[in-house]
Figure 1 (cartoon, rainbow, N blue to C red):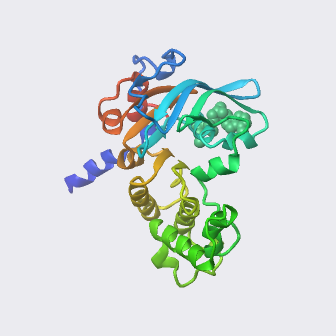
Figure 2: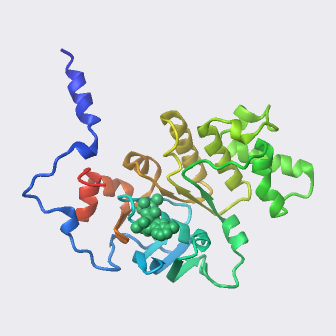
Figure 3: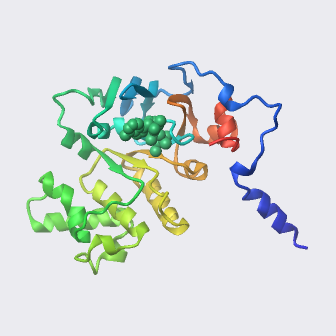
Length: 295
Ligand SMILES: Nc1ncnc2c1ncn2[C@@H]1O[C@H](COP(=O)(O)OP(=O)(O)O)[C@@H](O)[C@H]1O
Ligand SMILES: [Mg+2]
């Protein structure tokens, strides 16, 4: 018998299959103190300074007094069980929650020291600076070229066709897609594979030269090969952008991020260097989550 096979099976055992001993204290019994985050949530000269952030959907409070700094040019991963507020918190960073009628955001949210929620702020300009890539690739029903040229056209970033061509090419190159599409830029984007569509959406986001890219589970609809390509791309992009990525995959967080933030029921429980979070987490809830006891 091949002894490798049992090892392999153990390694791929799904977290859900682990049974918690009845004597153990249940993670859900832990009482969380509002506004308290263990680890290193703060940074010097941060890109985002977020203080006592609360988010309400009608009467229900989805984010409970979270304070966090996001450093310049870091990749920070948001992890935690479903429904704990990762997407809600992420959407505060470029006011994507504005489109949800019942949603209200409170607290201090600064981008480069300036209030993100200042009523005088130009939200279109904010979203060009803080771009977003969604879970499901959402290319426009236009050509590959027009998808990438869309933002630069709206923001008047090119004066001549040749300038626009250059932006489209360099964005597609940065997104690792140029060689695959350079001979069919006029083809419909919706005809591409899922992984290509997601990289196209990343190219579209970076075409307006954002400072920050927010990604909400960008690989959850992709196969492992397309996921690997997007992760490679995140590593390259992190040289020039600040990246905030929500991910369901702890392996992905471990591979791509510098710091990891663990969310639980609307609280930010722990923020630490990613290697620390996955080896010696400080909080018992983080420990429970990464060891697969819930989630
Ligand atoms: N558009 C919405 N309207 C009302 N409640 C919402 C809306 N979006 C999210 N919520 C609620 O806010 C909480 C956090 O959700 P979400 O931010 O999507 O969590 P996560 O991304 O961690 O899965 C959940 O209780 C969810 O039901
Ligand atoms: Mg989410």
